[in-house]
Image 1 (cartoon, helix red, strand yellow):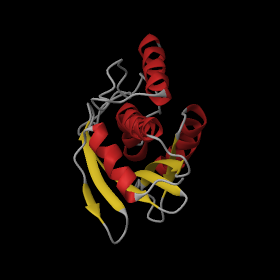
Image 2 (cartoon, helix red, strand yellow):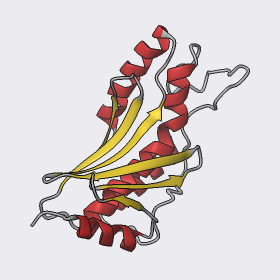
Image 3 (cartoon, rainbow, N blue to C red):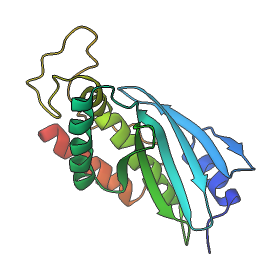
Image 4 (cartoon, rainbow, N blue to C red):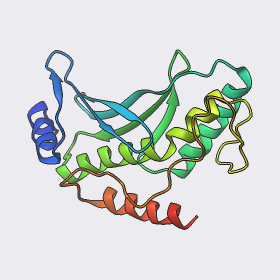
Length: 185
């Protein structure tokens, strides 16, 4: 059985996040305040997929050198992360997405999707925004010496994930394990 709009409503209620729903487009709007920024999330339901999206995650770079470095960095991040993916839209903005099949979607998978999107958004925001907009920034580098208007250094590395109050499932285990690895790094 595929997830329905009613199912997604129930999952959001169980997760504990407030949402706004657009019935015409089967789209929910929510968001969260991370340690690095505030993030707006759009959740869109189709017949076969539920999409969790932050668009834009980071605005398009104006500098060609930054754009080239950014695209390479996003490919490396996509190789390193699970469940989520970074992409670039038609305007060059960075998008962060989790896509889950609706077939037999249960609450733990839904929570895993939000957890993964939230975790990676907060963990990589500063790194991605600096890569996109600071020509002297080297992705993941602690050697970067920021200038005026610096947006920060490396992505936040902490064990605190800011997960929903009732978050559970494999994604939480993965996110916590990743957080432990990042703290040790």
